[in-house]
Every structure is written in C-alpha cells, then in structure tokens.
Image 1: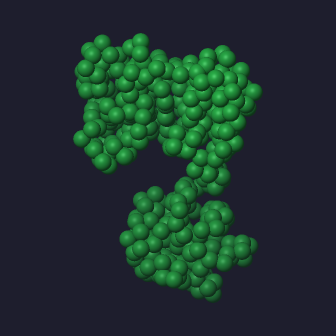
Image 2: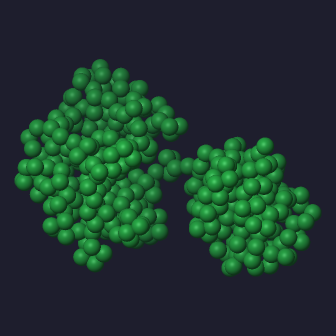
Image 3: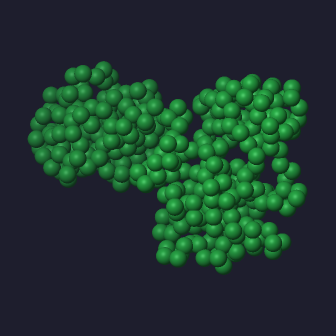
Amino acid sequence: MKVHEYQAKELFKKYGILTPKEKMCRTVEDVAVASKEIGIPCVIKAQVMVGGRGKAGGIKLAKNEREVKQYAEQILGMEIKGIPVKKVLVSEAVEIGSEAYLGIIVDRTEKKTVIMACKEGGVEIEEIARQKPEAIYKVYADSLMGLMTHKAREVGLFLYEDTKIAFECAAIASKLYRLFVDLDSSLAEINPLVVDKSGRLIALDAKLNFDDNGLFRHPDVEAMRDRESEDENELTAREQDLSYVHLTGNIGCVVNGAGLAMATMDLVKHFGGEPANFLDIGGSSSPEKVMNALRILLKDSNVKVIFFNIFGGITRCDDVAKGILEAKKTLDIKQPIVTRLTGTNEDKAIEMLKEAGLIFAKTMDEGAQKAIALLK
C-alpha cells in the first residue's frame, strides 16, 4: 500500500523527523488560505502516488498571491501519468544549502534491511543506480539488533563532512529505520533530505510504502489508504482475494501461485511477448474466483489473448475448468484462450474443456509460444 507525501510526513513527525510547515488542500480557496498561514513564497505540490511530478509541472514555487492562485488552478485537476490531481500540499519554501537521498528497503538477495544514502538528492535513485551505482552507499541493519548506532553514523559521515550534521543525520536514519520496522514498511524514503541555510536537517519530500500483509496490525495506517488513487481493477481484485497488478502488454495471464505467475511473465517476455498483468488466483481457486479473474482481465482493452497456466496442487484443474466454462457462457469473451492445465484432476479438466474452443498446451513454453503466435 502506498500513501501520499503529506500522509508520509504525518508519520515522520510522529517519529521525530523534521518536515517543513505544510498543509494539504483540495480547492483553490483552501490553497489561498493555507499560503497565508504558511507564508509566501510557498511551494504547491501535487499529491499523486507517481514519480516525475516536477517534470510534469506538478510542483511550483509561488512567489506572490497571484502565483499562488495561478499554480493552484493549474495543478488541481491536471493529470500526471494518467492520474488526476485532486489534492495539493502547500509547503513553506525552504532555503536549501544541500540535498541528499536517504532510503530503506529490504534487500531480498542479502535477506536484510538495507539503508541507502546518496549525496545527490532530489533525483530518481533508480537513475543513479543505473548510471553511477558507486554513488550509493549501503549499510545493512542487523537482523536481531537492528540498525546499530555506529552503522547509522557511517551513513551520516558518508553524506556530511560536518560532524554535528552527520550525527543528526544518523539520528534521522535511526528514526526512519524504527518507523520502517514498526509499521511493516516495504519502502521508506527521504528525497531530498536537505540542510537549510540555518543548518537544520529537513525531510523535504517523503515516500512510504507498506506491506499489505502487515496492515492488519496497523489500522491507523490502513485508514490512510486513498482508494481514489488506486487502480480500480487492483482494488476489485484485492476485495475478491485475487492478486492483480496491471501491466502494459497484451497477453492476459491467469496463474495460480506468485512464483508461477512470475515465471509465466518471464516466459512470455522470453519468447517476445508482453504480459498484460500479474494475476494470481491463489492456491484453492474456486470457479467463482476464475470468473472474477476473467472479469478483471476483460476490462483491459489491451488484452488480445488470455493464457491460463495452472499447476494443480491444492488447486484442482477441474475447478478452474468449471470457471472457464461459466465465463464462456456468461461473459463476452472474444479473445482466444490458451490453457496449460497440469496436476490435480487435469484429465477431467481437459475432457470438460474439449468442446469449449480453447487452445491446449502441454508445457509452459508451448503455452507462451502459442499465445504469442495468436497475436500475429
């Protein structure tokens, strides 16, 4: 689950991380009032859960009341990467002395939490990682002891020569790590972390993502979910106990199990195709779940072929077959369907589907290739 910048900063404040004076607004009138409270000049920032707001014109420095109104009107209602801006954050204008990056994620290769720091703040860390990986300093937290003080200080001393500021940065890193662990976060990021003209360290921007599987422990965080900003199909899928992520390809994949879903997408890419989604119907899939999965897929106009790749263990292939047959009867499915069903009750499932006009495959490779061939 993602939250907006202003929500992330509310959590930062609870953990003692300094942020600018700010106020979230939904209307031009609210922006005008907030700018007077905060002071002009001020910064007006679009609140959308995508990157590239600045490049899209979603962040503006307003130097007078006329510009406050002008930029509020421009930003509220604009679209950034297809997402309409319904909220803005009015923030005090900070005089920046320097910018840095500070972030925390789980390094799945090392099976540890990693704290990352970069002296180049305010830019996309993914670009730095690609172009200058040596510019990113990494420190790993101990699995039992957490982020040790000397490790946090390593981060601070990497970013700042001034010992006082470096140790303040170490304290921020420790607070950010505590937030990350306490709230089951999957990403905690300050970009940029700035030193202002008076020497204060301020989190000028904030980004937090949370592990959905841990949200039952944090109803206050769950309450921050902005359903208007989430993909409608992903919301529907979650409510129906399906795992769905929309992608940009044209081969709709229906799979049971996250590992098999990833392998299926990899195979489609390997043979020259483009998956349209990640869609995991789970380990004990009822015919109804298969129907729901197909309803979601059919809402994506880019889907030209549907590829079922089912490995039946707990999942019974005949249950999946029933779902497909029901969907063929009740849904307007014009796309060809390729099926690879193997495992529990596969013979029964294939017998059931013989008259349904499906294309069968014996292996994953064959299924992916047949799906791609149908596009041509």
